[in-house]
Amino acid sequence: MSGGELRNRLARLLEGRRAPETREERAGALVPRRATPPADLVPEADGSVLARRTAFATAHRHGEWALGDAEGADARAFVILTGDPSLAAVDLSRALFLDTETSGLSGGAGTWVFLVGLGGFESQAADTRFAVWQGFLAEPAGERALLLAVADRIRAASAVVSFFGKSFDRHRLEDKMRLHGIEPPFRGRPHLDLYHPLRRLYRPRSGGGLDDGRLKTFERALCGVEREDDLHGSLAPAAWFDFLHGRSHDLEGVFRHNLDDVLSLVTLAAHLSRTLAETRAGGEPLSGSAACRARAIAKSLVEAREPREALLWFERAVERGGGVLPDDCARLFERARRRAATSATS
Image 1 (cartoon, rainbow, N blue to C red):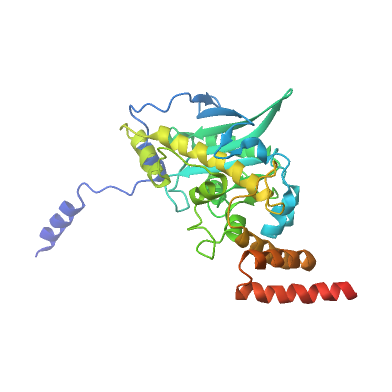
Image 2 (cartoon, helix red, strand yellow):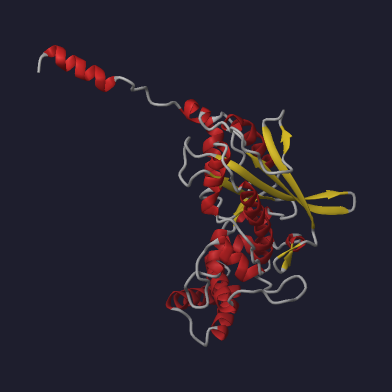
């Protein structure tokens, strides 16, 4: 092949090629065409953010629990079951309940946080309601405005409550905020991630435990929540992309799913706060395996170096578990017994 032929072939191969798309170009391709957003969205932040606000009376029931059951929570249970002393300051009536919907599970610039649900108790005169703000990313160009609105609301809260949020929601938001030069609001603010203490209390697939550690499993087993026509969370990204590209979409289902998630955070936090009492405020026993709960509380108290109280919970675990402790509990029981004996003689 002559040099001229080689140059001609290379020219044909390169013809029509273009440089890789920049992030801005990719975002520009996502600008909505003719899709109609869900109803009742109100423009905020000079029209850059669309949001829906929904308010509930504290007597509103989500499953078998009322939202108001979260008020007056015992924060000591949060500290014991997580080992995080900063949670002693958590007042659920002043906390912000956080749940996000994203375009994917990975982090970085390519993942969009397109819906943020933030709920909290609001008092006006003698009336207290639970209000949920759902900020929506109607087009990629509005991302910074949405993140600013979210950051402002988190900064105004005394604490954050989430489900798996320390590992997922927080990091997705922080990644995007840093890309836009926004100072993330989480540092120094107590963050109660319900996933870890609930999983510890009702460890999946242990004797008497739950089938898995999903939010839906916990809300159904512990709070009696049965969702009707719920859109599976894995379908949320497709609904958003359908909206952006002008196709028919089920974003209304995504909003409903996100709202239910936020409400479940409230009732699950209320359940968690009552674990040391083992009854609801009205005296009804808590749902969930009492044997699993007693073992988990006992083990947590050993780690918190409160051996005498741990021994009481180990006794309850033995009574509820047919007179037998699992091997890991038996070793911790001996440790608690030795520590209690030492403290009694000192």
